[in-house]
Amino acid sequence: MSGPDGGDNPIIVALDHSQAGEALKLVESLAPEFDFFKVGSTLFVSEGPAIVRSLRAAGARVFLDLKFHDIPEQVAGAVAAVSDVGVAMLTVHCLGGKEMLEAAASAARSAGHDHPAVLGVTVLTSHGDDLNEIGVVASAKTEVLRLATLALDAGLDGVVASAGEATLLRENLGNDFLIVTPGIRLSGGESADQKRVATPRGAVAAGADFLVVGRPIRNAADPREAAMEILREARREALRHGPVLDSALRLHRVESKGLRSNGK
Image 1 (cartoon, rainbow, N blue to C red):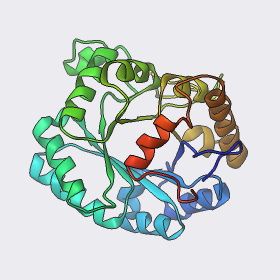
Image 2: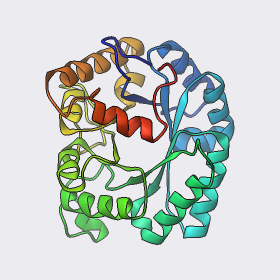
Image 3: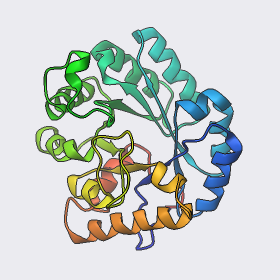
Image 4: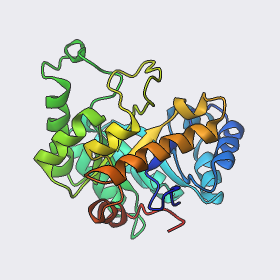
């Protein structure tokens, strides 16, 4: 859908609920301005593929964020299964390795013309300087760049990375892939368990294509107004300086992956 200043809406609202009724109530309250929603593990395990079908019936696009990480055959099967349900975008974990990532990309492409975009999860935004605990001696930025390079070499459509790495990825890997950025908080907002966070303004300025926002909307006294304020801030920054959000370059990336808003 178009934002308040026109152009494609870059906000993906995370449905961090455990019950379909709560999630669909939020979806209804945000229409028609917001039509892209993330379904994560809590909601999907609780409700199964039915929640995706319900969202699709309501006219929404679905970003299924299950971070598949298994042997290549299993991941390929999972990607094929969720492709049949009609998701627009899904995630696999880059730590699964190149063979697994290639299997995921191939399975998605086999779904046909309207296949989902496959994104590689790099380093979770809940990680800060603690990567050594899981055996990673590099900094978060270095590790994100390494894993993003692997994902693109394997044929994925883009990556999930924090705003703190988005500019680095654009500078080193170019503009022909999507960057989806979680950990979005309004200035002064509580970061909770997220370590690498950014404001909507910061994420847009860094070059993110989509901003995933959950708790700042879900926990707000007025979720709709909170969502609109996040969108307004993102679009003000897009109009101010680049890489601007609704530039021809960004829209080309979004359209080439079949992710343009239903309302456009």
